[in-house]
Length: 359
Length: 275
Ligand SMILES: Nc1ncnc2c1ncn2[C@@H]1O[C@H](COP(=O)(O)OP(=O)(O)O)[C@@H](O)[C@H]1O
Ligand SMILES: [Mg+2]
Picture 1 (tube, rainbow over the protein chains, first blue to last red):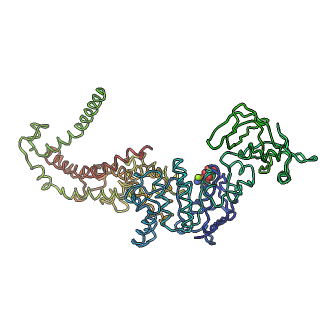
Picture 2 (cartoon, each protein chain N blue to C red; picture 1 turned 90 degrees about the horizontal axis):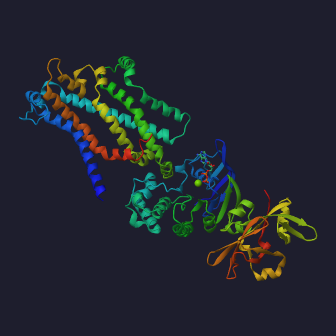
Picture 3 (cartoon, each protein chain N blue to C red; picture 1 turned 90 degrees about the vertical axis):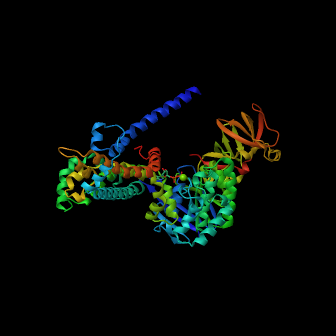
């Protein structure tokens, strides 16, 4: 086990800056998720930690030792590739044992470790098969097993679940998190799926365009997004963004097209911190609703809106409407769901809202 | 249903016709080798009236047939090994390592396909004379290797580039250096490409008449095509011996093809030569 640290790491491909001044410290045994849209530099970071890609500037440290000039095979890391990269001509046993054979691990020891990993992953009946004869989920497990038997200092996983179907993905997500906890190996897990990130990560790095947006625990990312990008990225239904201006006469308030909300001091403060007049109000769909308690306390936060489309998801429903010219979504639980065309008073929970500078 | 059956019959008809077209000359060659000289002239395409082994006897008694045979096998095997080993290494470098001038080197090698050796034969002759390899089997091996490498590099590089580069990276992380990755991960996967290149190279080297004709003087260094030519006299040709020699000369390519045909077909159908 070892901690991993990246200090002021840059990666430049010709003209493109793939990773810009990246700083991150991953503690021993931590599962760190790197998440961001495709092309934001996640894979590049992983490959630099693995030693498959040179670092343009900055330093990478594993267990406190700088490894910039250490070859991939000497870094004692294991990597699960997005396409698994199983050796097609070797059976499952040989795939998993290959790394041990190269390192001259005794045959008995190899057999023991592969057998144990296969049992943990539930693939011990497949050891004699070639990768071609395996399903996607089984291949995924073999790739994991190949990484496990090495007993490395660090696991690197590049979107390991993205090639699986939705149901299997959810199942493997839970299994992977459990396995990581059990093995306690420091892990960097790359994904573009925010749900995966939120459910698996001890901490999450959110990236965009090669630049770190925020590094935090899942809960804090949800509660305190550092900027518009993070706010929009996290959350299963994206956050609503409504353009507003901050007014400070006798009572501080937000004014936008079709809305006027007096707001609590904390929100004023976060609005002032941006240093801008023109702001964006961020409210999550789950913070807009029919809560009678909140409506009684803050009648000034009620907004009468006309429901345009209503999607029922079973336990809850998504209600789509427009304020001014901005499309807004509310996520309502319970049974008093408005019908399309109906006008309803929805209360915005501004205690949980965010203000960002408009771009 | 009926149309499909007709289609199938037609298909098999065409395939049978093709097979016959390929096999008939071989059949004629083999049957003729068991005829007497008189039998060949009186009834060129018929079944041998009287089976004679005279041709086979002549082949071994009149010339150094075993020596030619050995020379041919030696030259072909050595050239093939040289071609394949160098081509695999070149393809590895060209498709897996980025370095300055990578494309340039690749096109430089490919340009070799466009230069007929006959154009260079005079300079080659001088060259080998000067370095003392004239009338030496090594000259044949080196020239055939140089001729074969461009096309093999083309085939194997194309195939190599289609193997996911993550395989080599996984091997690297699994503790392989570049050599081990080539040997244990890439090489087994390149078999179809290597078989394809080997088959394409084997036949012209085995059949080569022109280069041995120019570079070989001594009888004991002759290869089969050159040796068999001895039977063509100015006034009289020993036809039974010619056909017996040809029949025996055909065996190695046939065996070679049978061994590699499965890999060869895989190589042709899996995009190795799609350019
Ligand atoms: N080998 C390379 N050569 C040039 N550009 C590259 C290379 N690898 C990645 N990039 C660029 O770097 C950026 C980040 O890529 P990547 O790390 O693969 O993104 P992600 O994994 O987040 O989708 C992209 O703009 C990509 O085009
Ligand atoms: Mg990627």
